Length: 290
Length: 292
Image (cartoon, rainbow over all chains, first blue to last red; front, side, top):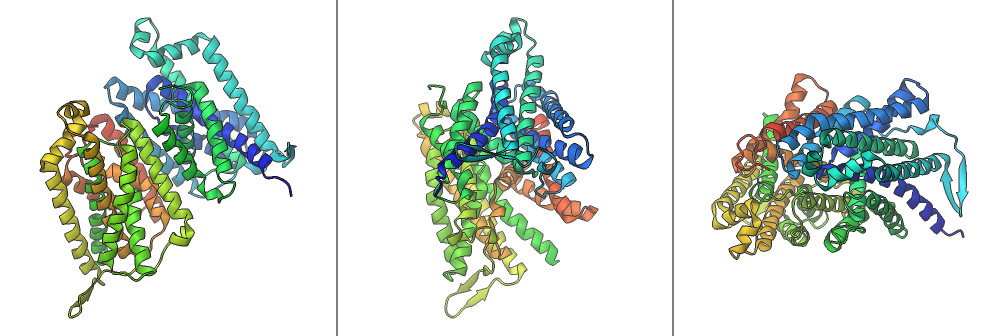
């Protein structure tokens, strides 16, 4: 009998790369604004549904549809920042107010998606990629999953390079460290935060599209994805771009190996158990000693 | 008329949830988004005890409270370590874990199939027995319970205990300096509030006669949260007002002509945007006494 372990590893890596996309965007935004942006989850759903609308309903070329969807997600993220979070920050609202506001926006946007596209579970996959499958050390991986894997690694590396080598990356770090000081030295913090929202949301969109091709889309997918991203971010180290990456893979492995002997339905419970254990014993996450 | 009674019963049940959550969020300033979990514990306690063991409603209500209190003690102990947004996220976690248990512990809860055929409350003391069969009778019973809970919440809010809670909300460090063990206060109010939610759950199970996990998902916790933020934090009448408004909202939407499922989604759109609007312009809600 074949061992199940290679397949579990492959599943973990794929889940990990999707979670890390969500966590990356989330961490990027959290790093600069210091609040839990729950709207981030629904942005991923918007990505999936935009591809669904453009590619499947309107028949636009699928690569173009994906490209447009990513831009749309970035743009929606930017809008939330400009019209909601920035005014709130200017009022010196607490992180709690921002959290509740983002929760409200999340609920509303999710319901709007459900009104337009129904609450049904829908798939994106049947007009994209072949059903080719690859063997990978005894585990099976589909072509779509391979693309997801490549895309997320490219994004992760790209983001890491951007943070390290560009002026923009340094400006983000400056804003994360201290927004007021960054302002004083002449950084246009509003502009930086706006761009961060755009990039972070675009990455969330990629995650939503990836899920859409891998399994499918439903209006409530955002919450689940977001929570996994948040857990990954916290487990890895909140506000730390590399932390999100490490946390995502850690979470994916624990989740997938956790259901080795029990039913797969328990994944979510396991994920939150991990979160709560981390919050109790290592609240700073893997990377932050605190 | 039956329809109005139905709405009044729903308002009563959700008022219990709102008033109890207000004790944690409004008076103590802790953003707990896990209330649906406790609501569900009460509901499942009554449902299982009634359908499997044929235990009287009032006894199952009581057992539900005990079970919920014990579980909330554990949750509260863990949660009392956190503050602010971490508290909120960790409380999310408890809701999801409890929801998973409702959904997946099929031997106990029948999972997504739900539990049908839950009985109405019966008073049976030998010479006198009475079934709260008609909705009107049930309404009277649940309204009495809601009023009692309201009185308890009001008593807590105005007692010295309530004043310590408010002090924790305003400045926890300072009240610690005065020698108050704030962890104990936070834990105690969490347990009290959870137990009240369990009461609401028992009534809900008995009224609807069928429960399944979907009622106790995270979105329900967010909904209860929206109720009290809309009505007004740290104000028990506000919690009631918010409940009336948000329970009637989908009915109004349906009345205006939206189909039922769209009305349900429209309710989410409206209360989601309401939350956003309140955060922008009126963080204390309609009649609240505390701003987040």
